[in-house]
Length: 275
Image (cartoon, rainbow, N blue to C red; front, side):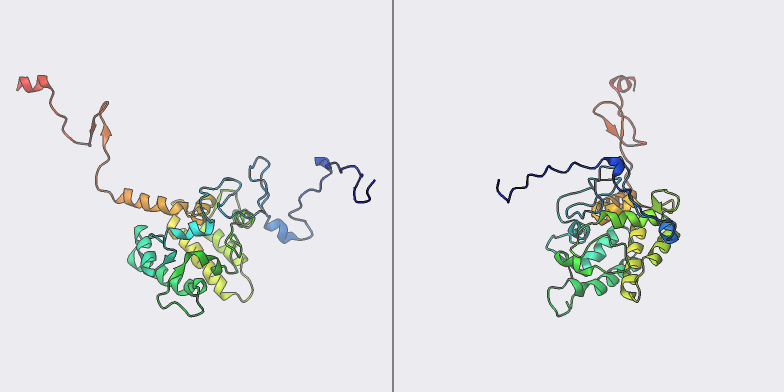
């Protein structure tokens, strides 16, 4: 027999009962019990939340994400690039903010802060862009510390840190965070001497809160996930347009006829004869 052939029997898989149990907290380290990490539920179709995803943003509640067309970080940014040339001008950002029905001061503040802080990192040149443009393909260069770590250094979505953030600070399992829980989570995520990262994280979560604007005061995890993959933007614009529309919605009056509320019905032949 060749010495390069291994004739040993193949190892058999260990029984489920003998496998080591996942240990996310121990009494000897009380902080681990106070802020537990996320473990996918047994019935979750998201098999491994530690695997990064490039084309969609999955969670235990939405294991297949929302959209899987392109790079997830690019779809997060592409809504602000209406002409699709890969370059976001400050005017593009301002118009998108106004389409959310934001006031002029809010739109100007967000536009100025975003482009002033993030333009240079995405620029393909070492010379700062005089127009403060953002380059979508280089958006991954804006990764910073003191955040949730949801995106890695190459712009891929990481389900586990995203789930961990909500698992740790959603105290009563309501599926989202109040503003005080969010503030506590941001303070707990701070890194030492990382002023830029702390300010950027607060700015990004502030943008998420203002855009989603939860009526019950709870920022839902799935709303944030859809914001990260870019699928929520279209819904917010459509909702604003629907709210601002002055035309009453048509109502159906039998097969093939559509009339508006308070609209007079056409007279029948019998009614015309009686007149």
